Image (cartoon, rainbow, N blue to C red):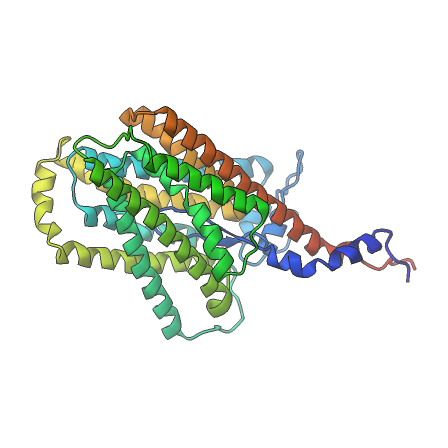
Length: 415
């Protein structure tokens, strides 16, 4: 048997196999209406590499890949790029539009925090569209846990999502859209911390740099004496909004780590259909909790008067709420689409970009004041984003090399 010329190098790399396994990461993003968790080091990601040039097959592997429908394996180059572009628009546009519409609801006379919480998950049936159009291949593996356990997970996570959405609603009530978006960026820092303690993920220098930078960015916003709070919002309410948004970002990051724990230790399945079903049913629970809160708090009695006193009219009131609900789900469809078509690393990069686009959109729509402190906070946050994304890129390369070792170390057939 003749050893491959690169075998020595590859055998040396095998010593780091445990480190490569620990380097596997899950990408998380805040989309207000639920949870997206994808392991971009999975086999699906490795099989979703498209060819360059004018070659017709956009995916290298011709046979059906687990979790990816056969039609996606036969896309031509221009079709693939069109679908990718559409999903990028869905993600960035949905994220920015949902935040702006949420702020618009408050600006024009809306005041129900429970209603603002409800619309973040109420349009979850939209997620059945990608679930039905892009079904994952069925798995013959038996269920790893009972139906009772799965329902309990959905209920617990759904209740947490409802509480988290409530905190976000309070934050958006007392903060401008641009300030709100910048504070939401701290979820990446919280995510790194919770993943370290709960999911045993490594704390690299780049991740630590990201945590520190995003913390500095949030601190600048908190200490900004020239706070651009919406009209009629006092300094004390501005602080409440800041604390609620920061707490919501922390709670959401904790929720993501708990979700990863559930996928790894309890459900033990990470196909696209399972992830979509998780988001659909947890959103259903969160919607039910929000409806209960709306009636228990008595806010439902004020909705009729709120609609009649809405500055832009009753039709605009209804359209604003419907538009907010739909855009949150459009954003989620964009995330799922990019996972199917490219990788979740790419999806995470685009969702990170959307966090930077939202403050700029708020400047154009609401004429938010862009002080020097806020500009500095945004630049520091972008630096933190870059560190976070680059670390994910390095981890992705490491896992790809580890997975290629069995292929590159094959025996020479002519020996």
